[in-house]
Length: 72
Image (cartoon, rainbow, N blue to C red; front, side, top):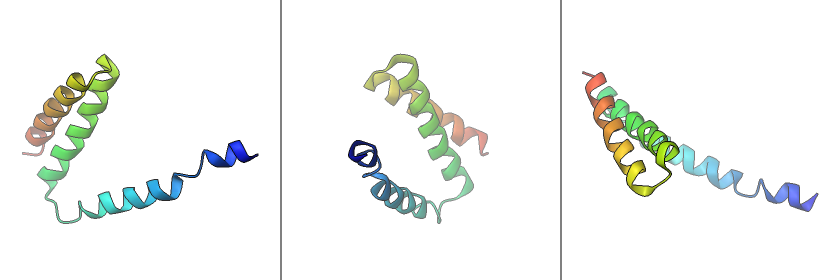
């Protein structure tokens, strides 16, 4: 039972981090939100495809540009 509960030890910290991060988006324009969303999605896709830091950064950059252009 202890091992099962240990897996949830970081959940409150994760919820706090998510609420602080999302609270920072309150004053953003739609274009800025789309740029950030594109960067996050692009970073995840880049990491899944290659698994390296370089691919993650490249995916985030490409995703950010696409998100920025879609919002226009």
